[in-house]
Length: 119
Length: 107
Image (tube, rainbow over all chains, first blue to last red; front, top):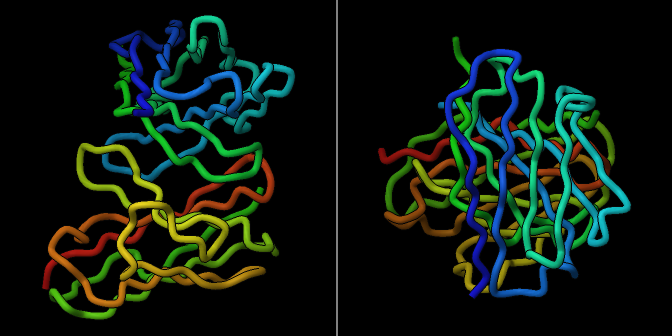
């Protein structure tokens, strides 16, 4: 059974940093693109970033480029999102999602972890 | 960036109704269009990929169509468990973008 489990969310002050993790199981992690998608409270979905199977390609939405870094550890079946210089508008539930290719669908999602940026 | 516009933003329907949600892209995206269903407090669930391919395990009352800039999600006979918010997503080009969502409510 494919499972994705996010962790690392919490309350952080503006300008602070947080590192999210996503533990994958039930599939060959190293064979898939992986994505981060976020959802502010009561609002819609926003794609944040994705990363190729070997980590050689990474793409970001403009609003996080230069502040967030996506990475992965295929030996540990784990996906990460390092978030620096956090802003109020980064407050959201962050989901990790498996991708069936760089420009394909997300067929499995974790349950999400809440990041709250507030003073 | 490619903008995705869904209509309507919300709708009220009864069990058994046929429901249609549309999604328009700001430029041609071929068939790089996916549909997701999300219930409150839950992760999105993939329904349709590549505009018209039904994801494994998804009931056949869901169908998708379209190419280029105009796409449609149809629920042929609305069931109680279908009351949720539906999102389209383009994966033609990064940044991958979602529509704003369509909330399907009970009439």
